[in-house]
Length: 107
Image (cartoon, rainbow, N blue to C red; front, side, top):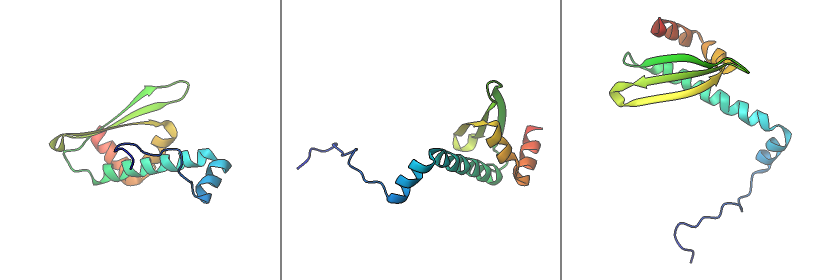
């Protein structure tokens, strides 16, 4: 019997599809994750109520633009902070409903 709290970490087998994806293009996995984050932010901004506060600030300009996006809901004691590059921010603002809500909330 194993003692509690000991877990086998390195013996896991990956599926053949996951192994092939990593070998072919590891950046494809990163871009998929980036798109899921942008989609999650879009859903949260659109479904947020009137008590939601939204702030977007540029924190770096070189060597590439990095933006800090904060979504705050004080009634729930919730603050979500996400760092996005310029391309991800453009992808987020490409949706019309997000763009109108951001313009309305940021003034």
